[in-house]
Length: 378
Image (cartoon, rainbow, N blue to C red; front, side):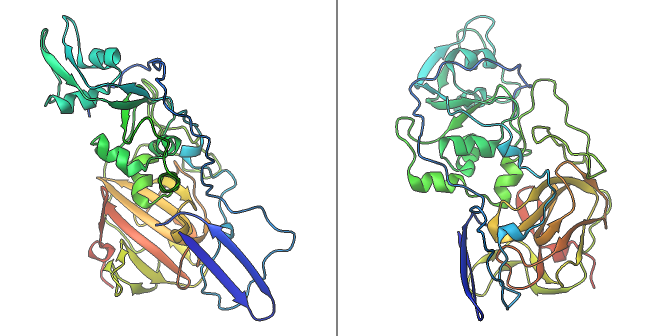
């Protein structure tokens, strides 16, 4: 999605920024990747998510001040780095032909997956197997064909999707992934699409677009065997590595509070022109402190969704997540624990904001919930 800033009264300056808008078996040991079978390596450069290099003379900024701010206007912690950029993914999926397999004595579902190269979850779905996925000798199993990527420690769903030029949401659907959507090292993930054809430019561009759902379902790195989730840090100066697995709190502590004190200028649901709003917009002056709506752990802090500008996502437990967008300054890091009422950002007009405001969402699982149905009445 493209957002423009037009300024002109004393001088003419333009700057265009391209960006993007808005279980299974017990964890196995890490396995060696089977040799790839002519999976194409794509030489087409991936779309970039960062602005172009700065010019010698910065763009002139004019009124009105309520125009959307550029991504570069978001002040972020120096160490901020998305988890999906920490571990590059090699598109070395193994192409598996659809076939039948006769279970041998001593076979387990995971062993069948190792022998055939298909994912154990895909085999279970194709044969109607339910946990604990018991199979018996001489049983004939259908092995679903396709290309299967072997997940390595530290890889995220978003990074895998970008490596193959496939939208992460398509991979989620193809593998029937469910909450909490955290991949595990050694898991074989089915990559949809024609294994013999390179993705189109449109497909690759779509793979590099992000929305809140992508971050919630594909932003956590796969854990190595016996790797425990990292304990949240209370001090923003102590940063967890982006490959660390960050677990959400087990349960929600108390209720929600308003993140800022301001006027709701746009409500939850469809707008006048039919566009969907997954949260509410609250008008506040620039640099207003933005408070955590409840205790939780920061799952994301960055500006990877151009429409929302500076963005913080906090997990609260019991499947609840809160989202804070259009911030001018981010004050927390991924993996940091926060308390209800703690200042996590300063408001702004970044992203595609219509004015200085806060975009605020509450989600239960992947489903957006009207925040005003959960917040205290004022």
